[in-house]
Amino acid sequence: MVKATHGLSVAGLVLLLLAVGSVTAASNPGDDEVVARVNGVAITKGDVRIHVEMYERAHPGLPPGKAREARARTALQTLIANVLQEQVAREMGISVSDEEVEAAVKERQGKTDDASFAAMLAFTGGNPAKLRYDIRKGSLEMKVRKRLMEAVLVTQSDLKAQFEQEKYTLFPEQVKARQIIVLTPDLADRLYRQLKEGADFAKLAESTSTDLSRAKGGDLGWVTPGIHYAPWDDVVFKLKPGEISQPFRSVHGYHIVLVEEHRKPGWGRPEDKRELLDELIRAMRSNQEYNRQPLNEPIKGKRDEQDERVSGTQPAALRSAEQFLCAA
Image (cartoon, rainbow, N blue to C red; front, side):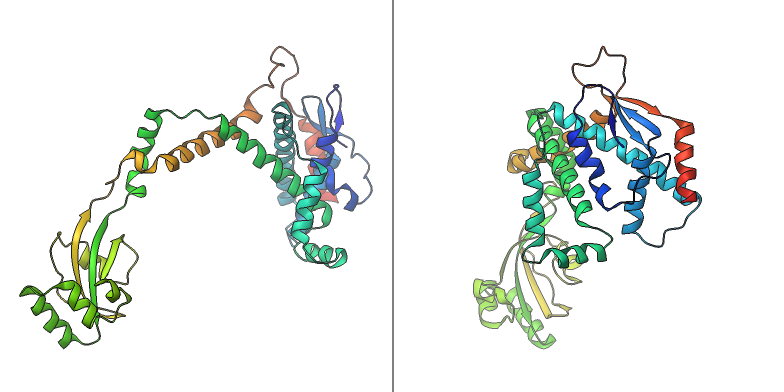
């Protein structure tokens, strides 16, 4: 199926793309017809057929006809992307060994015997060969992404710019509060009057509250919106530091809350989240590079060669592949 017309080694590609061959029917007439060529590596009608059939086994009941033609086109694009990604990985000195794949299979299989494990995979539309295909492809992608992340250079200005975009998410509005919860409205009203007359909030919480925070004088620490049942946020986040809420009811009982401090959204500094900001920048840029490089960049050292990274699909052959699949 996948063939090399240059001196390029394709052993890794055969394992990556055609690991499912052992569970596919014998080659059909016309399987060797080339529908795309990637740096000398030919993708054939048979490769597309195998990929489509593998997908259909995992998703039974899919409609035939035009829908199958669309699956053939998607399969071809996937195969092209797989070949390109493997070639980029090879240039970066990255590979996935058979030993790594088998170790991952054993970890997934656990103590289940081979027959039972194969039956489990078949139940979800898979098989051992497809599992190895998925593991190899996923491991290769993970290694490439990790290498690209390590290569990203993050400057102080990058961190500041990312902070401006993320600060309201990284540093949401917060209140530092104490709370008393009691079970009756009469007791809540009586405690509220005592607090307004100057009673110590922490001592009242310790002696009267049913909330677990009573052991700490009602201290809740810093609280962000969305943690408590309504109407907690609507009441408490409108209070100013030093203010005490009037008693309000929730599913837990009757609350009285003292706000000690209030932080507005975006209150932090870039250095407070430097590691996280650095990780976000590296992840975004490496993801952009990963998605861009294989499809749009020539291979290093081959910029002067006439052969392009993807020479393009052969329209007539692809239509033939689609028609072949629809007739199958």
